[in-house]
Image 1 (tube, rainbow, N blue to C red):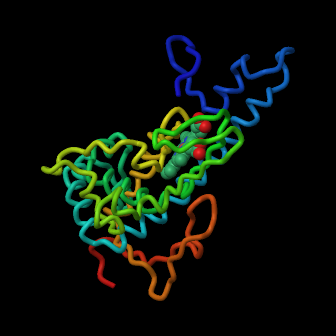
Image 2: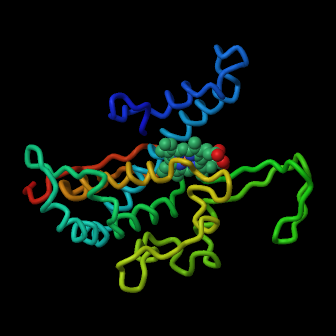
Image 3: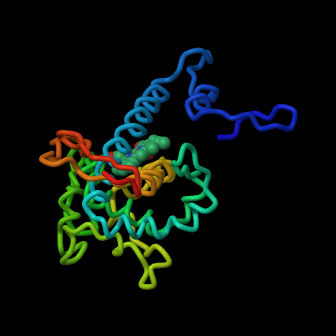
Amino acid sequence: MAGQQTDGEVAAVDILSHYIDDPDFLDEAGREPTDFLLKTFINFMVALRDPVGAALPWLVYNLATHPRVVSGVREELVPVVSRASSAAGTVVFEPEELKDLVYLRAALFESLRLFPSGPIERKTVIADDVLPSGHKVHAGETVLVPVYSKRRMESVWGGDCREYRPERWLSEDGARLRFVPSYKFLSFNTGPRSCLGKNIAVAQMMSVAAVVWNFDVEVAEGHAVEQKLSVVLQMKNGLMVKVKKTGECV
Ligand code: HEM
């Protein structure tokens, strides 16, 4: 994030300092942070770390159990690898080099579709209203959207809704991402309270490309991959994997 200019240079500023330095978030005396600022920080601490931490193991798991998708991602990476740098025989990618890769992005969205970091979306009604479906809601009531279950509804995602199939995100020629409305996908929420960090999260998760290119990953034999009953969809037992450098013999 760009900050104040010093001698023509733009100094880097982290997102928290950006808020702290904003006088709008201090009390009237300009000294103490407002309640809103404290809540914003808590929001960022929860929103930043947990959803990506929960989503990455599911992505690695989906890739490890779908070699066909790994081949597709590697194929897409071939032209990028020729430009990328490498350290100690391991190819390293910059976010800029990965941002336009559609198949990798589709693999990521498909993993978040099946395993949304927030499996339930909870809203509190502030005023009596009628939903587009015709359902009446009253102030103070809670509306729960079962995001996780919606992924497994044939009426929403089709007969293959339980399958991990990145192709559903792609145009027919595979060259572009298909438009999927945010109210259907919902992993980043929809409407005015949508995830503010979606692009950062996607950029962070695209870095899984380095794992896909440099390593063969297998789920450890006998390891039980299970979902944890929680507001964040984590893996109950974590993910234990066997990792081998690509091209190396066992
Ligand atoms: C895979 C990663 C992520 C997923 C699946 C995700 C998903 C979501 C969802 C579903 C919400 C709405 C929560 C609600 O109101 O019920 C949300 C809100 C939010 N997210 Fe994310 N998020 C991710 C990563 C991030 C990251 C990396 C950041 C920050 C850099 C971030 C910042 C936020 C913020 C600030 C909000 C609150 C927006 C508001 O209340 O107006 N998220 N996120």
